[in-house]
Amino acid sequence: MTHVELDALTKLYPGTQRPAVDRLTLDIESGRIVAFLGPSGSGKTTALRMIAGLIAPNSGDVRFDGESVLAVPAERRSAVMVFQSHVLFPYMNIEQNVGFGLQMRGVDRATIRQKVREMLELVRLPDISQRRPSQLSGGQQQRVALARALITEPRLLLLDEPLSNLDAHLRDEMRDLILHVQRQFGITTIMVTHDQQDALLLADRIALMFEGNLQQYAIPTDFYRRPVSERVARFFGGLNFIPATWTGEVAQTAKANFRVALPAGVHVPPGPVTLTIRPEHIQLVAEDGENTCPGFMHECIYMGTHTRCKVRLGLYEIEATSGADRPVAVGEGGAVRVYLPPDRLWLVPREKGPD
Image 1 (tube, one colour):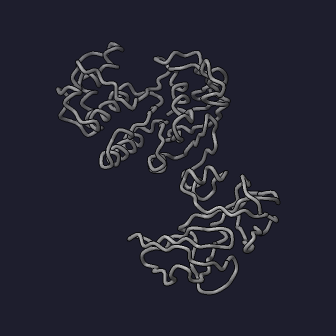
Image 2: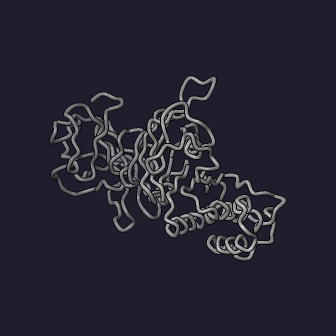
Image 3: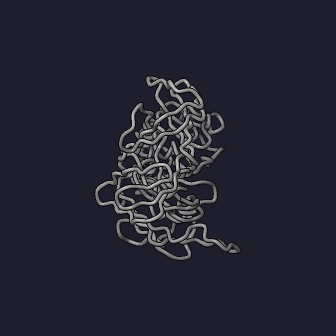
């Protein structure tokens, strides 16, 4: 297990104006899975390659267990990378592919054969050692690539979009396998993905990046309940954003005032903010009370597992979802009341729009 620290890590490619990665600072605890998440061009793969030693940063540092590895070549960092494209040797069988790293280290043939058997058992492919890569499915090739990476007992496992080429069923299987392997070995794992679901299901913490900059580094639930900005909230499916003024006790909006129960230790200075809440946390109620607001049903669509409602609150529209066990009795155009629970409301910096 390895503790990884990134200190102001920066990469500017020749001929470009904006850094691909700009002063990335992270503390990755030993034995954890961390996901670098973001859209294409966010810098996540560049950051992974700098950690692996495949490209050099312009500035900053990469430390393993407190020691800088910038001067250590990639092959000696014991940080093994599994690429999206598998990169298996087509002229070797699976046993030779998986055992290649040990062969390069001069390990004897009997030990390699035993280790290969153990790795193929681990990735749940015990009977394919004599096949060629071309005889395997994409999911099987990805498992073989994982086995080849783990056989050398690296300090750090780096996964570059490990699930992007798999269909839905194989993605589920591969997620389960990655978790199984990581828990068995306890190896610090960093993965790159553009898929929020993969990050949420696999990672202990997520580093969300936009345009080379770290936006938020937190546990998965914080991206839903405590996003640091409207942009982060929108990336994770946030829909409801209402301009407000925070007094230190309530959020004043054009339609109503709402009490917000901020967690202990969280301080938001008084002034312009944006009030946000997840659709599933909004409740349709029959009576007025604290944190309720009258509105009109603009649209109501039955989705099978839930009902999606769009409610007009003066100048603004919010979306609420109601479970299948809570039928919505109000039709389009009808008067409704919404309740915004104080402990589900969150405040982010104002990005645009007047009060």
